[in-house]
Image (cartoon, rainbow, N blue to C red):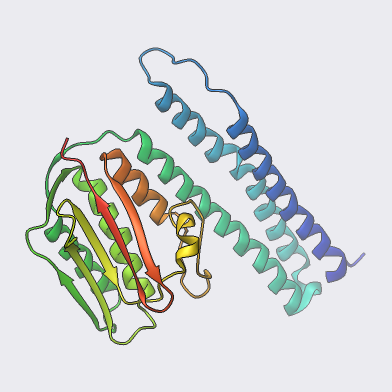
Length: 267
């Protein structure tokens, strides 16, 4: 018996709903589960991070694999009777599953930032920023962006993690100035706070009423279609800055740009 689009789409949607429910339940159980006592010499935080990574890696991916597998089976076995519209619907399901996998990867990366040991050393932030901007120009050779980097900006910290901070902050400035002419980005020492560094741009900006959402995981103030991304970058930046004993805040105005101010402890 031939199965039409009307019969297959509810199946695909039910699979997707099952994946979402499975992911939500696993996340809820993880949040509610009490911390286990330390084993051997591991710290409680390290154990919790390991448990979190295990749950995210396996339990959250399981329903997604079911969705992907059965959707591909339906597409391969019944593609001839589904037609173009039916195939497009299945491709959307597969696309959603792919995005979920990317979100899981981002969650794992964010979790590892809490347990990764800090390797403190003197860091030339101006030099690092220059490397990051060179990479951005290489990826977007057609863009003309005015970038100002104050020389001599330095700090004590983990060079790899601090590069991640600059990659996210400068990368965001680069992304959110995509529709601005002329686009301007600056990395400077704060004029009134010598221990604070500022990344400033004249791009899309944001409404300060929602500033507290900026540093949350998967919290977006702009649509993913307009400005793509995982929604984890600023959460990672905040976690790295806090691990360095510092602080970070943001200021912005819609269509007038944004400024991110961060400080780092020397010890």
